Amino acid sequence: MHNNPPETGAFYPRDLDWHPPALTPNYKTSVLRSPQKAKISFDPSLGEITGPAFGHNMLGELDNDLVLNYAQPGESAIGERIIVHGRVQDERGRGVANTLVEFWQANAGGRYRHKKDTYLAPLDPNFGGCGRAITDADGYYQFRTIKPGPYPWPNGVNDWRPSHIHFSVFGTGFAQRLITQMYFEGDPHIPICPIVNTIRDQAAIGQLIAPLDMNNSIPMDSRAYKFDITLRGRRSTMFENRKEGN
Amino acid sequence: MQPLDFLKESPSQTAGPYVHIGCVPTFAGLEGVYPEDLGAKMITGDAKGERITLKGRVIDGSGTPLRDVMVEAWQADADGLFNSPAETRGTADPAFTGWGRQPGDGETGVYTFETVKPGRVPFPDGRLQAPHITLWIVARGINLGLMTRCYFEDETEANAEDPILARVEHKVRIPTLMAKREGDTYTFDIHLQGDNETIFFDV
Ligand SMILES: [Fe+3]
Image (cartoon, each protein chain N blue to C red):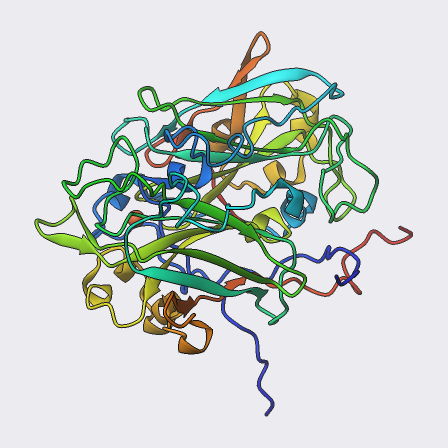
C-alpha cells in the first residue's frame, strides 16, 4: 500500500465538448430532460473536493464475479465468459487507489433483471447483473462476467444498443463522480447507436471501447477485455488560494 | 515544444433506465447480492445535529416527475466537517456518513433522504457558506450527471452571506435552490427545464 497524504487540490475544469451535451435530439429522452439555461461555474470548494470513501472490507467475496454472485450453488451464468480489467487513473495519469467501481449489465440475451425491462429475451436464473470492486493501491480493478447481449430499445423504430457494461466510479472527490458505459471492440452497433453518438468526438467514443486483451485471457476458460477509466485530475495544492495569514 | 501529456476524462454516458441494478440493487429486486443498498443510510449511529428529512421530485420539461431517477447527496456534518479522507480540518462525526443515494419512487418519483442539517463550511477565500447539501442527479436521458445545491429557505441570514448564491446573476432564480420547510421535512423539487429550471453547477 502507498501511504500518500490525501489529495486536496481542486479539480481541472471539465471539458464539456468532450462529454455529450445535455440536449441530443436523436436520443429522444434527452429532449425533455436537458437543462436549457447556462450552468453556473465555480472553482471547486470543500464540498466538491471531498467525497465519500469505501473500504475493501465492505466487499463480499463474489462482488466482482457476476458469473457466480447470483447463481445457485454449483451453477453459473450462461454466456461468453469474460474478464474485464483496467485501471482507474486521473488526467495526470496517476492511478486512483481504493476507489469504488460499480458495474451493471444485461444478460447474454440482452435482458436486464429489472421489473421495467420487458424485452422478450429470457432471464437467466443464474445471472443478476450487478457487481462492484475497489481499486488496488495502483488503481487497478477487475471482475468476471458474461458478455452482455445487444438489445432493442424504444427510441427509433429499430434502434439497438451495442453490447455494453454500465460503470459508476467515485474517485476521491465528489466532483469526480462519473457514470459511463463500456463497449466492446468491433461491435458493429457502436457507430449507429444514438446513445454512443451523443458524444461528438470520435476519439472520445474510442475512449469507451474496450479492446480484446488476449494476454490476460485465461486459456480454455475466459477471454479478457481491458477498460481503463480516466477521472478528472487535481491541481497541486502547493500554491492554493488561501486567505493571507491562514 | 514539449507535450503537456494530460489524459482526457472518460466521457460520460447516461445511467440509463436500469441504473438501480448497479447502484441500488435491492430496490431493483436483486436481493441477496449485497447486504443492503449502499448509501441507504446516512445516519449510522447517534449523529450530532438536527435530524431532517429531505425529499422531492425531479421534474422534466413537461412537468412530469422522473420515475427512474437516482439522486446522490453529499454534505458536511452538523459541525461543517466532511466524512472524507480529503477533509483535513478535523474528524467528522463518525455516526454520519455525509453521503446518501436514493432512487426516485417508482410511482411518484419522490426521493427521500433521512439526514442531519449540515453545518456551515468555509469557501476557499474564508467566507462561510450557508448550510447546503450537494445533489447529483442521474437518469435515462441525462447524458452527464447534473450537480446542484439544496439550500434551506429558513436560513435567511446565512443564505444572504453565501458566496455561491452571491455569484448568481439572475437573483430571480435563487428560489430554485431553496428547500421549503414543513416541520422536520424539507421539500426540494428539481426542475430540469422550464421557467423554474433549477440552477445547475459546473464545478
Ligand atoms: Fe444498458
